[in-house]
Length: 460
Image 1 (spheres, rainbow, N blue to C red):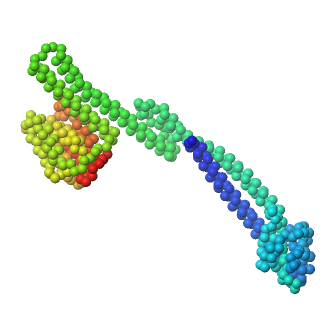
Image 2 (image 1 turned 60 degrees about the vertical axis):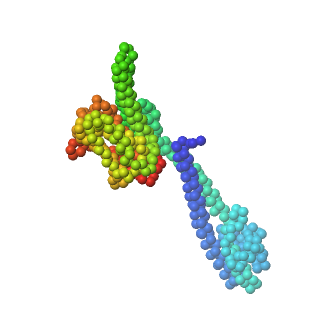
């Protein structure tokens, strides 16, 4: 089960505080004990060394006066035969050290902590005498240090619990305050209409990450709203374009059915219907290409596709329309030029460009189509000697259903999708398209795609 972010933030904060508090408490306790031990150890060692010297100088009997009752520093004098000879009244009668510990201290001296409490901290100092090596032991009870340790531990535990409770509460409140703007954004987005997400969310005046998130969300909503508007416009324009040939087909068929027709009249009706069906088929093909472009459907590229046959086939397809206007088609391409591309889509590009050029070129003029390799790209170029693109229209020529105000109109047989399809296919191949006018005034459209000679497969 996934916990809410607020709970996870609070839990992480509590875990971090608990670990840091435990570490700090351990360090502090060790520092307190180290300070106390150093103070006690200095006193223990100083007194043990002094008494050992007295034993060496005056004998063991001199130690009796150095063991007053109720003293913080308690004395134990151990005979060379491993028995206690002298000890302070507050020490246990059996002594503090076992024989092994006595033997170790008799050799080199040193500190020890003994008892289950522990109860005593002591220092042993060997004292050579005439009858052997005595052992002077100075000990101090650890009651006060143990009590101090218990007090410090209790205070640290209580303080740690207070810190955890207050810190957890603060983390919970701070996490809630930090996430409140995010929750508000979520509610605003959830309340938006699916059909109209254009209303922006409120941007906090904090200038922090939440404000940047709101700005990014507004940018996203604006793009979605624009895409929906373009989609609605596209559907409306497509419906309008499809409705016209369908209406013509219906009217022609109804007229052919409702009254007697001669064979020639029926043949004319069939030809008219065929023309509208062809027009409708081309429109549907264009719409399918644009829909695939919107969905970013990958384009299957075939390696080493020659360009010259594609240009020749497109010129043959446009020849009948060109002959009707006495237009000369000129094809220029290197016979060895080849690239990795989708031949069907590139042929559709050439058909659209030649169809537009022939449709708008004046009678008796020339239309040229060429394919060249330039700077690592394949450049397809179609030029005509017509009126060219009106001022300011070239940059909008590739918009869907976009028609020029004069010269290039739907009445000329176009639907306004030809150049949009050209741009979609060019971009599907990783390239671009541009339109403009030649110095002589005619129109020119250029399509460039990366020239890939040795790669097959797919490119998006």
